Length: 72
Ligand code: SF4
Image: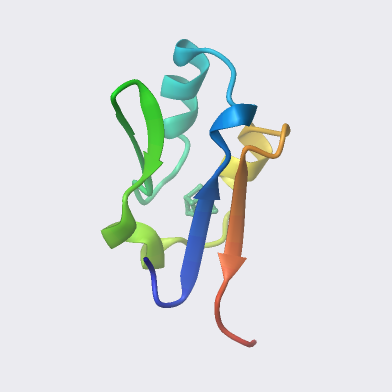
């Protein structure tokens, strides 16, 4: 788990495999990958998240949530 950022995936909100594969590629810092045909968070990359929200915008069903673990 990241020290500063926590990225969560709700698998129930993902659609098809093809859509998931395309979505994984939106993250510029490789937070996501696919294992056993399911999207997963690459925990060691989690703190690299730039809060760009491209992943959230790419999946408006709310399948991805980004939590900032620090105060601004
Ligand atoms: S907010 Fe941006 S950097 Fe963070 S996980 Fe989503 S796409 Fe990647």
